[in-house]
Image (tube, rainbow, N blue to C red):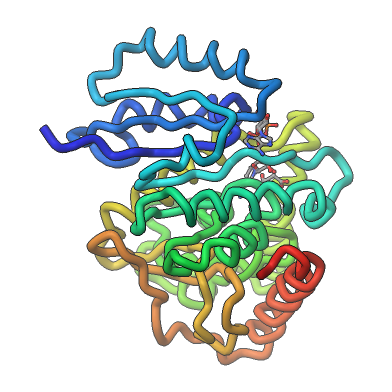
Length: 327
Ligand code: NAD
Ligand code: LMR
């Protein structure tokens, strides 16, 4: 039996966590042979609710669940963590944009970045789910100067999956037929779901759809899917977000499928001309527990340049709005 890995989850009594913890404990994230210790963080008023979630975890008698920690202290939750899923944050309600959450949630991520810096494994893999995810990841990363910036990522896998599903439906194919999807930029309504490199059953996606549908229906629909779910459900996406978080971590830990890539919000070193230091979504492959930005994707069209710059601009503005939290 392998040694257990420590998986910290914040916002552990919230909606996304309720759809996520049981799957992590059953081995869906790190593998069916990998025991895990869950280290669960909540705010003090939610500790009772968290206790109920932990009782349910116990009642599943998961063979891979080697321990559970429940705490309202980040330095306990992140102690020696190998993985950290930062979910805990206020979700947006109807009519709000994700950047409206910036002030409300930014303070959480500076404190948690510091705690990760102080007590987590030096190789901890961090995924920020709480919105605005890219800028929260940037805040956590900048508050953790002793950790490699590459350890901090933001979730755009849900956007990636939404983009695949909507394209498969339009082209009468299955999600398995769609390869090389790319989400560029921010997990927000400025994100750029780019079909330039994408194929469906080996054929260029852009040859299978009308340009007008792509620009005026598909892109806005992927960009606005989070808002559409909030409107329909009265609450933000939870099970699909949990599914994407598990997929993001699984891919990072265990690697991408051959001949495909995924979208991840990662630290920019200036790739594709994107400002250094932003957490920007790029097409990435993973192997040996590490990610690489895919090189050489065609972004030469004016359309792509404009869309990539617009979402970069939004991330720059978000960064400037939280400058006081960036050491
Ligand atoms: P929720 O309100 O159901 O749960 C959030 C939990 O976080 C609550 O239990 C709350 O007590 C806890 N929390 C708040 N502050 C905390 C702190 N400082 N430390 C630890 N826990 C804290 O919300 P949810 O539906 O689970 O969504 C969580 C976040 O995920 C929101 O910000 C939402 O917008 C975001 N989200 C992101 C994506 C994405 O694709 N990146 C998708 C869906 C939702
Ligand atoms: C989503 O994309 O579903 C989440 O980020 C929730 C939101 O605020 O859109």
